[in-house]
Image (cartoon, rainbow, N blue to C red; front, side, top):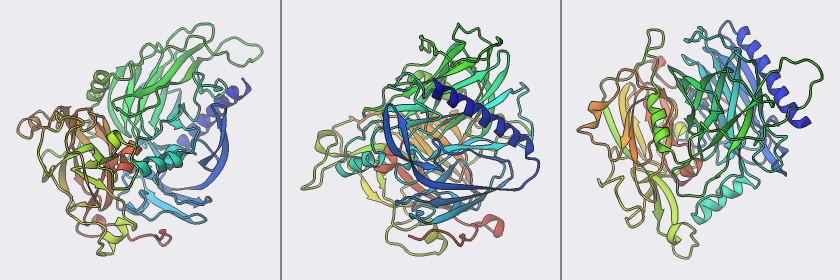
Length: 579
């Protein structure tokens, strides 16, 4: 139990320090951080292995800044492999060089080299995350990115303390080997061995009672939980036994508050909730908090649950003893793994605050509508090759039947220097190349071969865009969390079945739609998002299930420079890595 006590004491100390940091920020300034990419031996589930970390920490260090601050993060790569870091949800206004996705906005940081990410946090506040954006490195290279506001929170409930909750996944084996085998043979990847809360699996896994997250609370007090899904391939439900959650923010944008028994958070999404310690615990003094997958895939998945505890502070005095975990670990308010109805209902409850202080600037009229399928694909096996996908073929994924191939040069650098490049072209299709019954097609008998390439979508600065993300039933109707770099967007509509351009736009919410950076496209359905393309640069749009990105479910949006310096991409930094 000594290890378990250490874990929750350390987290309490960390939260006290962060609370003090929040109070100390009173003016715009430059915040400097150093990230060292290095190996560290770590033990989970009775299994010790070298783990790729930042500064030897798992999860990595929290970046805590204030709204309006300039941020400099020097990343030094001390391992013999390439890497990059992405600041997920930071809009990177005119600073696309700091966005991070490998070969999209930069060449990777090679072993032994450094790169300093420079950017300013403009008109953003709340909970985001950072993570590696090279291969599957974000399995362990991730952490919280917290932006403290300059104005008081728009809710009046006094907050006792703020608690980061980061979900992740743990593999006993080598994650790089999992990805490499998947891409070599075209089969589905091996699933993780555990989910984690702040790097700790919890008591439902072997040898893990000592590796359990415990958050101490005081009865009658309210806490702000900053919940982050950094898992590689899984959307997750989360709940706390006998407690309700009041949602007040999603993807670092305030929402109209609403209470719920559980939340669904997709990879790359964040959700802030208020938790009031208003229950009466049993003799253990604890209530279970748990996360388990929301499942829509046919591929193997980690069918397990990570658990931690909300420990009510005792008023008794005397000797401090190690906590005894409860014997009943059930969380009855946690939805079932395939509860699409609950996931859909939860998503529909999210609404922008839409106040004078925090307006909802959704484009009412659009200049361009792009309709793109988001699809799994099954490719014929090349001659003399071994393929381990369904029916002896290879799994891929695509948008408008274009399976994205990352080039060997930075797209942003080529765009900035006006270099011609045979690796990519500016002709991404703005509608599906062939119309069909997208969500009604037979999952296995249709022609599911895709085309491969690096086709870009190019728009003028200031374009009011609508992107309709249309799921398909190829192989399976599946929920796809789509992340847009460089822009927030508004989820103006969604539904099941096929998008109807003649009828569905009339049902859009153009008053207070949720503003996000990652949207789960409903399983067997569609989602419509609107944004103003007012950030010049090159921006990755992709599924945040890492296996799907590896298979090609991605595209690139280029926003041209506007008029004058304030609407133009900044010059590249001098230490920009070379390919």
